[in-house]
Length: 149
Image 1 (cartoon, rainbow, N blue to C red):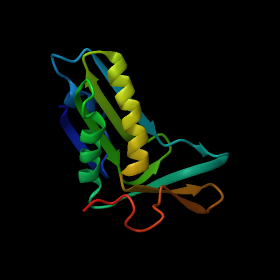
Image 2: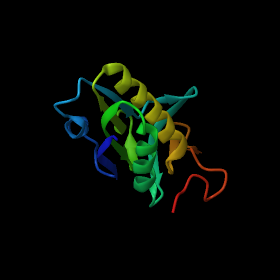
Image 3: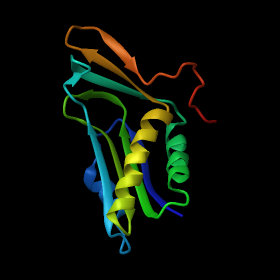
């Protein structure tokens, strides 16, 4: 069973060092790491800022998602940080780290985790564009979709 060492959804700046330290272990031979940053362009449009909003259950949903994703997988440790609030271009938005005995397992599970986080954890972003308009990304079709509890 994986040791979920650190899960944090926070308005404070994220730390790659903190996440890597959380998954470090004498049995780890490889760490899969994903660091998501705020990019300047999305679908051909210039983005100026993002504003992430998380449902109060998001940390619990994220912890459960990590456990379900890593069940029966050869990984030993996992840690995730996700930012909320207003982010500028270049800011860190999400960090996912997975430790395993071998790199292939760590990288595979890390890839699966970030895909599932984006699809299943109740965190949404509002993008502000250079033209002055905004759009929401990741909103559920109904207010309770994707929310546990």
